[in-house]
Amino acid sequence: MSQPGAGGTAATRPGDGLILAVGLLLALGTLYRLCPVLAGPPALTAFFMTEDGYLMLTVARNIALGLGMSVAEGTIPTNGVQPLQTFLSAIPFRLTGGDKVAALTGIHLLHAAIAFAGAFASRAFAARLLAPRDAAPVWPWAVALLWFLGPLLVRHSMNGLETGLVTLMVLLTLLLFLRVLERGASAGAAARLGLGALCGLTFLARNDTAFLIVPLYLAWAADGLFRQPTGLKVTARRILPAGLMTLAVAAPWLLNNLVRFGALVPISGTAQRLSAEFGQNAGLLPAKLFEHAFPMLPVPLSLEATALTLPLFAIAMAAVLAAFLWRMLRHMTPPARIAALVCLAYGAALCVYYGLWFGAPHFLSRYLAPLAPLLIAASLAAALELGRVLRRPARPGQLLAGGGLGLCVMLLGLAFLPRPPGEGHQQVVDWVAENVPEQAWVGAVQTGTLGYWHDRTINLDGKVNPAALEARKREGHVLNYVVESEIDFIVDWQGVGGWVDRPEAAGGFAEAFELVLRDREANLSVMRRREPRLP
Image 1 (cartoon, rainbow, N blue to C red):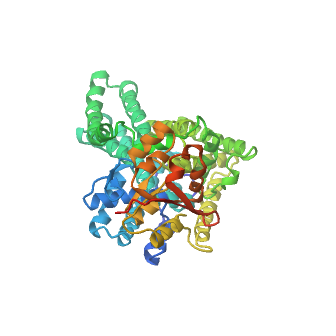
Image 2: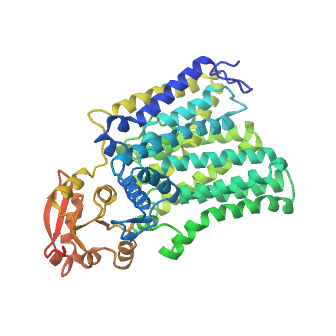
Image 3: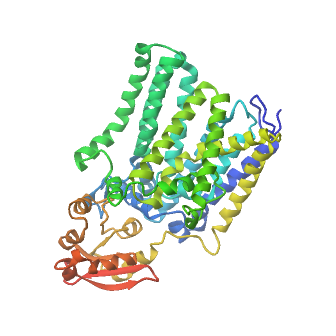
């Protein structure tokens, strides 16, 4: 049997030592993800959960209560979420009768299970990319464990959103695509239709996976026309039913978006693009790709795009991808090469879309997170190629894998010091709970956490509120919409307190609402309607 790091040329079974190490690290990563469940409140309600995660959970809870995809106590229909994860997240709420605290235990368990499955899918995908040149089982497991234990990727996979699920679905789609390519003519109709259905489910996991599905079908057609070749008629007969299956799975969501909300894209995406400037995120791409390729080295915000670090990250990623492309062209099997090219095309499309045409730079890392298994495999492949150049075939790979996993474990431990991180909105929730009458309506831009804990909350940035989105598109602000709404309180981060001083507020909003609190230290602002509309 090839020793770990020896770079054997044939697949080998892992030894007892490797099995033990992998088992311990998987157990550690799983236990870490379950810490909020073991600790209970307040860790259960704060650790890992994000503002947008709570937004999705609010919709999921309303589904479980029979209120449909909605927010604001079921009064505002929305499609501002990704459907597959939202429906899966509805299950714990259904099982607990909508209990907001008890259901979070099920949410954490669900996300941990998805991440655990993602680790095995990462290993399987990495094994196909690294073999036959490096078939020792330690290398695919290194990729999987770096993904499973990377501090940033742990948070992304447990944030209450679809990030972990879409990563798993992308990997499963690519693995099934590989299998269909390898079987060629012997791949039956069930396998091909299964791939089509899986592509549809992957789209429902996150709509931007259209950037994966389109090149996958193009590559599948090119494989049938040129590599095998089977001819146009046979290729069409194999691929078109799968494509129709993909459309059949995705169509209900697309029709819902178009008929009820006027566009194929969820309103959350439209809302986030309204304030975007062309190319505003381009300078962040090298750093975001770097920290996904080397998950043991998360990049501080202050170093993401400086005059010094930006070219360094760009050079590092160019070197990694160049080495990976060289290996792909020289050593991968044709099916693995095609799958890798599809994944690279998916990554390029994500970078172009989110780097040039999208806003919300603070979300860029999680938008690119599904690329992490490919990027980690590429960085390990580059290290192994460097070892061959240096005539130390395994040493750089061993340093990257061993040192990287050690750093990941250390950084995960540091997250508990001095206390577990929260989602940054508890001060808003607490003020509302202590000061707002039960029947009053509250408005806020950030309505994820607040809307989860206070049902009568109306979203004002348009991410889940079509009326607010329309107001933003029509007038550039929501001040008049707020005046005409049922909202009596606006409670949010301290910056919202500046609304009363905006020129657009004169004669309407400023007369209807007064600023009663603006605490910059607590990051909290409160405005109150001068003549409440309470029943």
